[in-house]
Structure formats: structure tokens, C-alpha cells
Amino acid sequence: MRNAFIQKLMELAEHERDLILLTGDLGFKVLDKFRDKYPKRFFNIGVAEANMASIAAGLALEGKRPFMYSIATFATMRCYEQIRNDICFHKANVKIVSVGGGYSYGPNGPSHHALTDIAIMRALPEMTVISPGDPIEAACATQAAYHYPGPVYIRLGRSNEPVIHPKDLKFEVGKGIIVQEGEDIALISTGNMLETVVSVSKSLSSLGLSVRVVSLHTVKPLDEQLLKDCFTNFPAIFTIEEHSIIGGLGSALLEFAVQNDFNHSKLKCIAVPDHTIHETGSHDYLKKICGLSPEQIVERIQKTMKELHLC
Image (cartoon, helix red, strand yellow):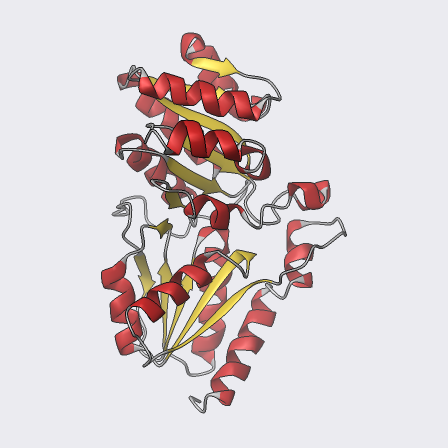
């Protein structure tokens, strides 16, 4: 996803002279092309994320459109106060781009596990939260964020995510994407779990279930029209995300269901349990520990459907 992001950013920068890229002393292999082509619009702020957020806010308030880039845990938690006070309170036109959502940086240990970033960013006033599901969505989100007013948080995977969507994808902030239609259950994912959810849907289809798959890339604001359709027409809805069970996509949909008195559908949230994993290992290894492998998700959905007497 990050390669798709920087490629789209370079395309935008060719025509948009107000676009500026800031980094917190990382991403060099990815960002080198931008630095070399647009040296006057590239700033390495160093390992000083709080300063980077404040500088980005200042640039935005002077009419520029800065993108600030760092690892997800660093781009959100190290500078949370500055994001709140300098960016959100002023509705500054800053785009915060994080790389490594979820367990993407698994071998680096729990300090690099980004499992609460959606929760804390969507809690901020004025903040828009986008979590693309594949490289096509990542490129579209980058372009859409540039033109979208106010603070935007874009949560990317790390690398090697497969392409799910066609290149001519219709993308709009605040509008989910129906990847495939179905009638029995709805699987709603955000971020880099999309590949897993598509795999899960194929397994469930082979078991006789008709599955709608939704990529809800924008967690704030939610696509209320699409969600109302899901809650009205599906007896069971499952949210699937590589994020803490608290405060992410599942929490957002639970809030939406309660506020709108939707009680026809059974909503179940599949996410990372509320505890810290102190092990290190590959991305897939850590997801399996948390019950987020395709096989584990299929098993959990089957169990829930039986408990609800829906199959």
C-alpha cells in the first residue's frame, strides 16, 4: 500500500504545487523518489513526531497541503496532543499517513503493533479516518484526501498487499465498497484484512452461504446508507479488523446500530482481543495468535451462525 501511496502522491505533486511531504526520519527507500524530484517540498523532521505535527499544522494554516508520514504508532501516539491541539482544533488541512497498521511490523515487537490508532484518531473532533483495503484503495484514498477539507488520517498496511479491486475503482470518502453481493450474511472489513475477508467469503460460499463482502475503508464518517441497508437486509453481520476490539470498526458499527435502533440483525465483532502480545514474529503468525487467520474466522462465523440458528 505504501508504494501505491507514494506513487499517487508524486503524481499529485506534479500539478499541485501546495503539496508538501514530511517524514519522521523513516521511509527513505519509499520516499527517495519524491525527495529527489521535489527537494523543496520534502522535509525530514527527524525523530520528532510532535514537532512534525506542529510544523504540518503551521504549513496548512499558511495555505499548504502537508502530508506527514510515519509508522502508525509513531504518527498517532507520539504526537497525539499536537494532532489534537494544533491540527484538529484549527481544522488544519493536514493529512496524517501511517504505515504498518495492525501487526504489519510484527517482528519489531509490541511497541510497533498499531492496534489502537483507529480508536484514538476517530475520537478526535474534525478528524476523518480512512483505512484502505488494498493498493488500489490506498492510491484512491491519497488522491481523495488531498482534495478533502480538514484533517485526515490514512492507515496503510506495510507492503505486498494483493490487489483486490479493479483499477477503475469508484472511491469516495465516507462511502463503502461492496466487493461482492450476497444474501445470507454480510462481512464488513476495514484496512488490510480485506484479503482475508475475501478468502473467508469463498470458504463460506463453498459451505452454502451467500456472502456480501463490504470494504468500509472510511471508519469516520460512516457510510450510513450502506449500513442501513446491511442492518435491514441481513440477519447476521460480522465486522472483521486488525485492530483492538475496543474503539475500532466494530465499536463504530455498534454505536451506529444502537443510535439508530437497529435490532433486526445480529452484529458480531471479530478483532484483536484486549491484551498485549509480547511475542515477536511474522505478520501472519501474530494474526493467528489473535484468531484472525482465515480458517479461524470461518470457524468462528460457523459457530456463531449455529448458535443463532441461522444455518
